[in-house]
Length: 326
Image 1 (spheres, rainbow, N blue to C red):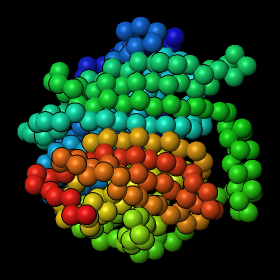
Image 2 (cartoon, rainbow, N blue to C red; image 1 turned 90 degrees about the vertical axis):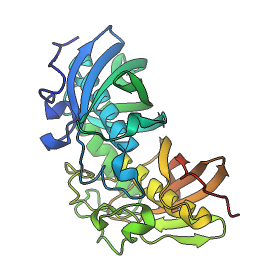
Image 3 (cartoon, rainbow, N blue to C red; image 1 turned 30 degrees about the vertical axis):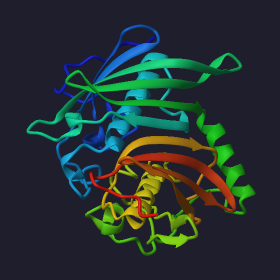
């Protein structure tokens, strides 16, 4: 176990390299400490305003975004891996699953002070290759002022950079692409912000949705100049962008079906099974599974090269009075 980095909550953020961020403004974790070899406590502060996470409509602009809290939980896990398990910063990480379930109530409301969070991270499983630690499963419970806010669980692994480079070359070669990624596809035409529950066009990550039978379909828009989604250069579509694309498509599908306006994300289940390349189009397909008693469930996949690279199930709280029109 390496030296603990412990700082008073709300005074400093932890070093940005611990959470895989370049912009200091995108670091939310403010302290980290160990309770045991398998349980760790971090604190985080959420800004009251954020150009990406705070950009919503229908009253959701006055509430914290669950994806922002999931990002704080992701940062907590990364900090634990580097600070307490001694994993070098040059390792390449692969996200396998990333799930979150939000509590309900006023705990999500933005008030006169930035939200101060406590995150308890528990390591539930170690993964080893030839006796070397190569992955973790973690659970994170997030509270605000002692009130439960979000529970997160994820599984991720890491490999040496030379292994990563070989893996990426082989994957791209098998897809008929150049061995190294050089430039993303042109952005293409985005959906209008109103279609997906956003105010700013720069935060729209899908094309205008179309309906085919029971499915709603759109093309992924990957803006590699986006300051939050692409805080640092990557050679594939990040998992967080994939989740956001499915959320936006789900919001559009639910609005078309129920006229509900902006539905509020409250649950994420994700399973990443392959890379999505930035220089080839990716298609997102969402289906409304249930609409019942003020809640809806969306099932979604993202496909590229004729194969599915990720599966998602998203839950949404619907505005009061929403009716299922189908």
